[in-house]
Image (cartoon, rainbow, N blue to C red; front, side, top):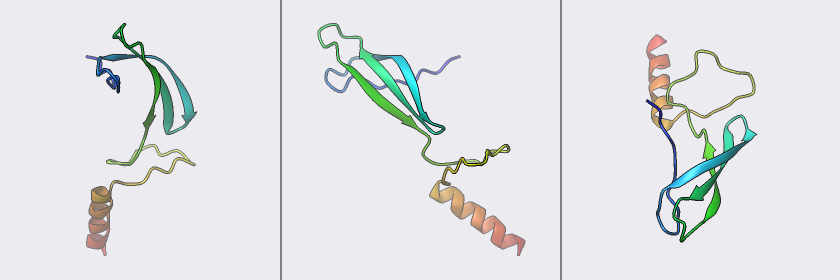
Length: 84
């Protein structure tokens, strides 16, 4: 099973297809989409970005700093306080 991440055309709301992507950073990609509606033909760039951490990596990489989601940060703090 494969999951396709897409965004509908902002003009005609038809399905759009990703044609290419470019790495901007370790946490950001720009994706070029083409509208499938031949009467519209809109081509546009959307961003895909890692925003926050829900579960920390077991293999963190130096230099990659992704903030914790507020609820995760609260839970981690509560766990740490219980260890004291």
